[in-house]
Image 1 (cartoon, rainbow, N blue to C red):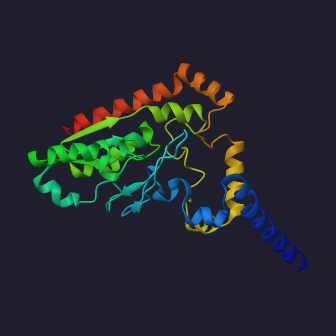
Image 2: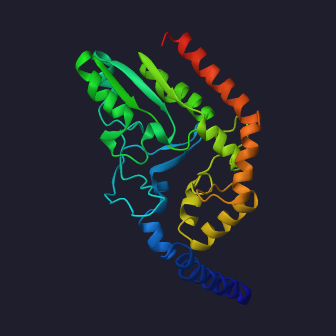
Image 3: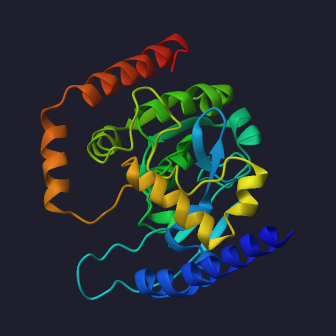
Amino acid sequence: MDYILYILIVFVMAEILVAFVFYPFKNGQNYYRMKSTQEGGTHLFQYDNELGFSLKPNVIHKNPSKPVENAPRRIMFGDVRTGKNGFLFTEDLDLLGKTEKLIFCVGGSTTMGAESRHDHTYPSILDLKLKNYGYRCINSGVGAYRSIHELLCLRKKILPYKPHAVILFSGYNDFEDFSQNSYKPYDPFSHCLAQNLPTNNAEKVLQMSALFHFVKRVIYFLLKKIRTESITSSGLEDLNKALISQTWLEEWQTNVGQFIDECNENKI
């Protein structure tokens, strides 16, 4: 029994060290405070056993803030609202679909409007302009979606609503995930948020531990699957290599081609 006690003591000491020394040094606050404030907006996303990941349903998240003085000036996820289906559209689509023609906007963070207020995204503005003409525009964008996610989203979440039209804005995340080593061909479970999203209830509990979170990130770092916004010389080299690579581009062409074919098959 003594060795169990020793292991427990070592774990507690490591937990305290990581939570109250490493994280404040790296992030300016301890792990538990960082977790409670949901640093980075990852709490808005969830693991999906078909799509890889998606936005959580019924989210109302507002984090009003002023732009910082010095670059970079990115203020992420300031105003996010989702409906019961996880779309960035809070009205009842089942009712709307009976009387209105539905247009779905598909894509990554540009479509989602990750740095915009809920009513300032391009799908929201388009919806406002079209609603008096019998059309409604639904924002089904999800930050970090690649073409494989967009194709699967069309099949699983959009086609059941029999859309009148679909707008697709796609490509950059395929390129960036490839350059940042967050990519496996045609694999929706390999993506830049994978290290932060628990895939089961046990991992949800473990995710509360600073030590578990730290170890998981170290593993992803060693596997080169953590994406960062910081540009380093090696990062620039990776971007240059991705620019001349055909791997991600060929997959993007295949996925988007399939996306268009399935829209045609469904008379969209």
